[in-house]
Length: 316
Image (tube, rainbow, N blue to C red; front, side, top):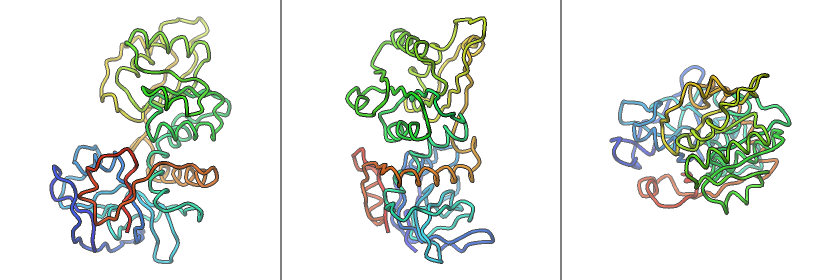
């Protein structure tokens, strides 16, 4: 079969011949229709993600949409190495597949799955959002962050605060409050402090980490309420602003902040797949969408580093 094949972690995948997968017990063969090139897939393909394999050659691709041998259309994830989703065929454990709504286009479903999963899993499996709770999304102007606003609203958030650097995009998100991050750290901390104490936040989804997360965490601390500070579930999802920050121990001792993460390893694989299935059902119902750059799998090498902000989806 043909596939996008990684021969060198320092080079883009090449459209090349690869062995055809043969399902083992408990696995199914998937005829792949569409697979997205997400940041996760790029990181895995470069050998830099904590889930990257170390043996080459390998076919990258975390997830996709395709048909099973009985003709049913499914979303699938966690294909069995070395058979990633960027191929004509892949294999995967049956429990890592979910049916797709008939009205949802395959390429769009592939594009929505990873960014939509990030907030759906964080809100339902990690933060356990309750109807009416207030949610702050730190980094809401990217694909995942924009979807997170819609998903939080769908799941019952009572109030949503969205942050980001692009004020024009923030204003179009439909959030109840926006906070522009283009401020000095002390000023941003004070802006966060005023916001979260005027309208207490119960859940934070953080796509950025770095300076803005440090300011936000600092804003929750240091008030020593005799009744105890309100509980805040701070869910770390992405690190677009840096992988590390320095956190004073007193920030946690003097606040109700509970630090959580959401991603591969913090949620069981089967739960992540189930979360994506739930999210795609909601996407079909509400008409959620995202800009998609659809290319044939055969163009993977040239498409891999092409400029553009649309979600790259490779199709067979």
